[in-house]
Amino acid sequence: MNLSDTPVKSGMVAIVGPPNAGKSTLMNHFLGQKISIVTPKPQTTRNRIAGIVNDPEYQIVFLDTPGLHQSREPLNIEMVKIAMDSLADVDVVLFLVDVSLPLPHKLKEEKQAELLSYFRQIKGPAIMVLNKVDLIDRKLLLPMIEAYTTLFPFKAIIPVSALRDDGLEGLRKEILGLLPTGPRLFPEDIPTDATERFLCAEIIREKVFLMTGQEIPYSSAVLIESFKEDNAKHLVTIHAAIVVDRDSQKGIVIGKGGQKLKSIGTAARKDIESLIGEKVLLKLWVKVHRNWSQDKYFLKEIEH
Ligand SMILES: Nc1nc2c(ncn2[C@@H]2O[C@H](COP(=O)(O)OP(=O)(O)O)[C@@H](O)[C@H]2O)c(=O)[nH]1
Ligand SMILES: [Mg+2]
Image: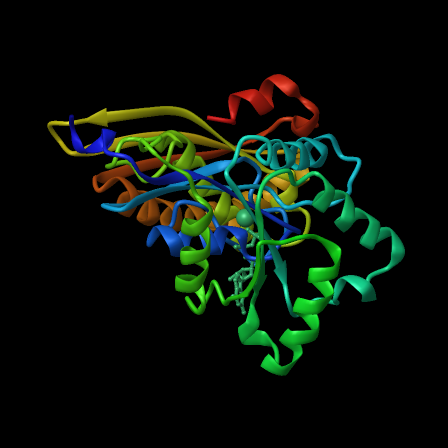
């Protein structure tokens, strides 16, 4: 019997909640590395991404998910579906909220109903994670905990700051207490189930989110057109297209004299090099694909 078959605490943990609550930040802190992209803009995460934490005593498979929010845009409907579907086969649900935002009973009726509808879809044990406690006075926590206690039978309500790594140890213990004992679900040496190709596209998308304003982040996607590894030279050559909705957006992403695209490329290349540990040659170009977010085939193509 090899080590991987030895029963340990092992299971899947979905991280769900409104956009910008800090879901990706939380997962990255548990992993000790950046798997999921993080920006100050809502709706950054578009797909379910697994981050796997291995320890001699346990394996926790976190699923980072897109933010829950109501919207009639096909891409957004798909994103919420991805998040809600991930609730189906997990052992524990972490419901994350940003404590600097209004409490549930202070929300507009419609927003409150939305929140409750998400809670109702939780089947197994759930932990409410009150994130961003660094932004508020600790005295406000008790009424907050009481408010959430009345809304859903959470197994625990835990205040944390994912950004400052505060309270995460206690949260990890709560999670382990709820996980079954069994074989590891993944090999011990991989931190994610995402492909390098997908993670590279995500890194480029993060730089587009961070370096462009207004509508561009939400109107763009990244397509990896080729990904070639030259093992002898320790060089990976990546060709990728930043896909936008309209001609006018193409100009914005390229920038004056190509400066914007160059900055995006340089920042992305550095992160990709540290992700894969090889030299990277990154060739970026910008392509217009009208209504890409409504194109099911295109959405499938950028998923992996
Ligand atoms: N002050 C503070 N900011 C946080 C914390 N956790 C996340 N953030 C910030 O909130 C923003 C959204 O984070 P992200 O992880 O992308 O949220 P997601 O949309 O839920 O995945 C980013 O700017 C993070 O740096 C926290 O504990 N405290
Ligand atoms: Mg996210």
